[in-house]
Image 1 (cartoon, rainbow, N blue to C red):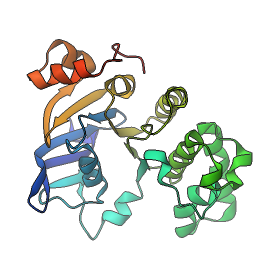
Image 2 (cartoon, one colour):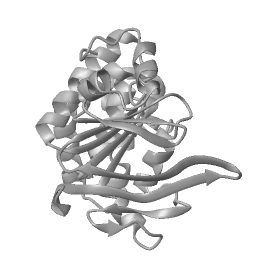
Image 3 (cartoon, one colour):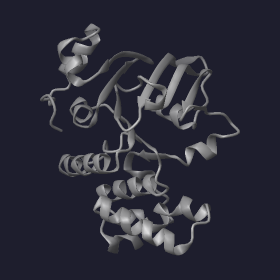
Length: 252
């Protein structure tokens, strides 16, 4: 892949917590304008890998590059402003309204009120969030609404890449299906680079241009879902797919 087509890259990155190895040395590139889905069983290292990409964790060895620049203590805060981060249930501050959560970083960076208001209006339309709910606090919002606020907050500074950690995992099936459709439309309309963590193969197939299957801190296989189905690289791939009882080859 040409270097200009890569927005984020990990080179021989590993991570341990104490004596527990969470990620073996991993090399992985994320294509610009594409969706890369990290999938695997609980404890396989998906969320740790995402936090390394964001610079929230430092690797024990190896390097993480964003737009060709290595993430380091002196530049990680600045580079992170070009990354949007979405966590499960939105990760909202309970003492701030929906609008306050969304605009927090913009206000910190000194945006004027008119610019913030214009961006908020655009994001509520994009995410189909009711404008009258912007004044509500997280406890007054539904799970789906909190997730939309988390997405708006991640998009507020118009980042080049979105990183999402199990963004729909806590939602009931009907709300989850609706948000999957809306998220997919947001990804298509904005053309953002996306990295998403999920444990659900149907969701991975629905969103992903490329699926990266992990086990015990290692990449077992990467490719489109048909590769995993028709040419499994390891018996674990087949076992993992069979365990996804509702997987039907593409629909969430």
